[in-house]
Image (cartoon, rainbow, N blue to C red; front, side):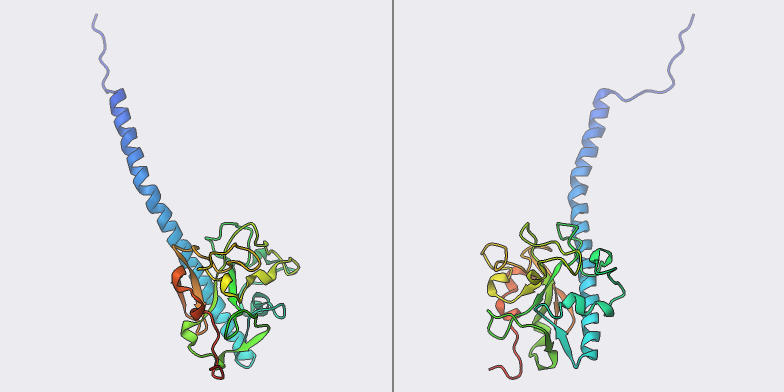
Length: 229
C-alpha cells in the first residue's frame, strides 16, 4: 500500500525565525521614519493654524485702527480675534475650537497652545490691551505668537472662566526659550523644543516660520516703535 505524499512544504523553524528577524529589522527602520514624518506633519498643522490666526489678527487690525491685542486681561488675544475665525466656542467652552492648538503639545486637553508677545521696548514690563502695529519697526523680524512651553505648572485652559490665562503672555526675558530658569509664573513660557529644537512663530507682518530656540532671543521679541530710541 502506497502512502500519500504531501504536495506542499511548510516553513521550517529556521525559516520562520529568519522571516521574523527581517520583519523586526524593517520595523526598526520604519518606526523612527514614521515618527519623524508624524512630527513634521504636526509642525505643518501648527504653522497652518498660526497663519490662520495671523489672518484673523490682520482682519481685527483693519477694524480697530490698525491695532491688535497683546497682553493683559482685556481683551485676551484669543478671545478678541475669535470672531474673525471660522471656529467658535460654545457658551465660552473652547474645546470645539481647534485653531489655537498645536498637535505636538503633549497634553491634548490644552486648547490654547500659543503665547503672545507682551514685551515693551526694554523688557520687564507687560504691555496691556491693544497695540498699534503701524508704529512697530521691523515687523517681519518681531515675533507676535509662538508655541508655548508645556509642563504641570501650566493651567489647562478649556473655557473663558478657567484661571491661568495670564501664563499665555510673554514679557520677561526669563519667559524665552533660552532661559535656564524654572518653568512657571516667571520662568520659560515660549517653547524650547516644541518642534525640533525650537518653536514655530507668527511675526507681526503675519508670516510664519520655524525659529530655533537659540535664535528666539530678546532681540526678536522686543517692541521697537518709531518713537523708541
